[in-house]
Image (cartoon, rainbow, N blue to C red):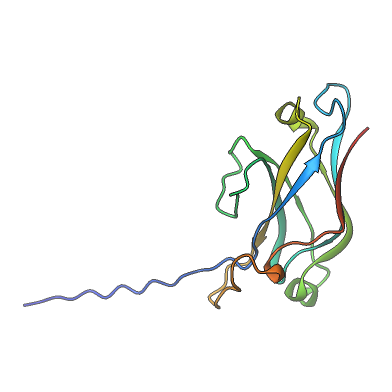
Length: 148
């Protein structure tokens, strides 16, 4: 007697793709005594993003599977959609801020850092938009660091 097993595997795609940007650091950004803040202006997340955005330094290949225990992880922030319609079309905010004070040593002595901005996507059984297409990445008008 022959027994055949059929396994069905459903592929779950994350719709959101990371965005990478080079950022000049302010002088002495790694020194103690100052708060270091990362500011995003005119931020828009892709449709069906969860609203959680992770930020990594000098790890261009970071994505939703990259561990927050990775040494390159700087932190995360959340954007809560006002309603399900906003979540479906993409969350937009005039500004968002991430406090990097606890990670200043990671940036000490650098003049420039490559940031990878990773919006976490809502798992979907629908086909994902082609990776890297503009509609799957977060967009922003400006990203900058400030010291307080």
